[in-house]
Image 1 (cartoon, one colour):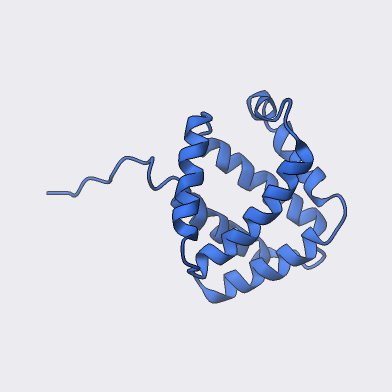
Image 2: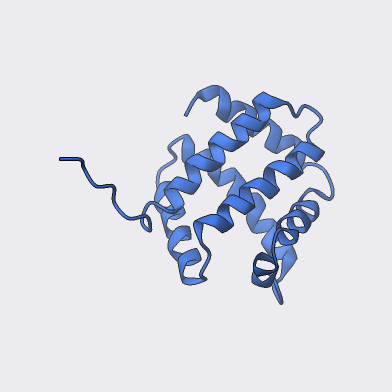
Length: 140
């Protein structure tokens, strides 16, 4: 992970999370992607989920910086989501909704910011699913 990507991600994250409506808009985008995704959020405390998402996005950056214990925490999140029947495709939808929402809320959004968000989120999604993905076979 390039340091510049992480810096652009952190700066953009600060800009978007400081704005009212960012998390509401994100969840609207995310749940609109499919009935299946929307179903995961029925009867959930959305205020609590928005707060958790904000914390998680900060942890994403901290994970990439190598803060102790966070990679294990992200792997644990993967196991929790697996029990909830959340698959990698749902995280891809999550990433798409997140980046689409950032594009609306970040006044400095451009191709570099978009790529930074993509790289950072993909990096962490790979950690989240590292305990679930089948091991790669070595070619003989």
